[in-house]
Length: 94
Image (cartoon, rainbow, N blue to C red; front, side, top):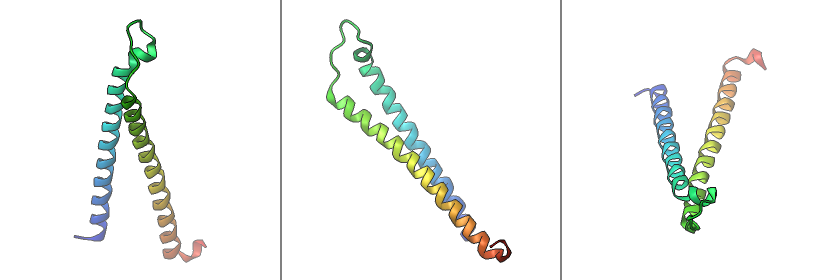
């Protein structure tokens, strides 16, 4: 397998894992929204949601934030590597 093929496969696998992670985190936040919704809407019979819902919601939100940080970090690193390689191959651009 060529290096370019491995790089392409790595990108596809990483994108797939990131998409699955985001999907699961958003689904988890939706479930928490359903269970904690009456508390936030101040309905008459709403009881205070368990602290575990807030902890779980925080973890899901943290997961989304880390995914976003990873996305921007990877884009920045790839852009820097591309520019470095471009300068190496085309010395007249310096």
